[in-house]
Amino acid sequence: MSQESVSPFAISHVYTTHSSDETIALGRKLAKQLPPPKMMVLRGDLGAGKTTLVKGMVAALGAAEPEEVTSPTFTLIHEYEGQMEPREGAARTVRLYHLDLYRIESQRQLDTLGIEELLTPESILLIEWGEKFPWIVAHSDGEIVMDSIRGDERRITLRLRA
Image (cartoon, rainbow, N blue to C red; front, side, top):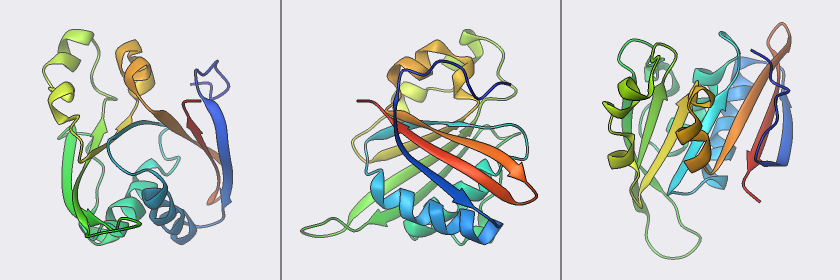
C-alpha cells in the first residue's frame, strides 16, 4: 500500500527512530502531544512498527508495560485505561483503544465494532488500517504514518488536521 497517497492532513512533525526502543520512546512523547479526545489513523505496512509505537503511548499513560501490549489483529480492539497528567490540575483518566481493521472488509463489518460509542471526551483511538474506510478518515483528527527505511530504522510522520 502506497504511503504517498493524498492526505487531508497537514504535516506536523517527521521523526526518525533507529530501534524498537527509540520507537517506544517516541510513542511516549506522542501520547503527551495527543490528549483526548483523539482519533488517529495508524498507517504503515505489516511490520512497520505500529504496535511498537502504541506500546510507548500505552506506557506513557501508565496503562500497561510495553511488553504487555500486543497487536489486536485477531481481537480487533484492545482497551487500556490510564492517566494523563494535565498541564494544570489533577490527572485525568484516559481510555486508549488500539484497533486493527486489517481483517475488516466492509462498512457493515466496521459498524458492528461500535467505534462511534468509543469516541468519548476521555478516549484516544489509534486505528490501524483505518485508511481503508472513508468514514474513519473523515472523522479522524489525524494520522501517524510509519515507513520502514532499513533494518529497525523508521520514518514516522505525524499529521494533524489543520
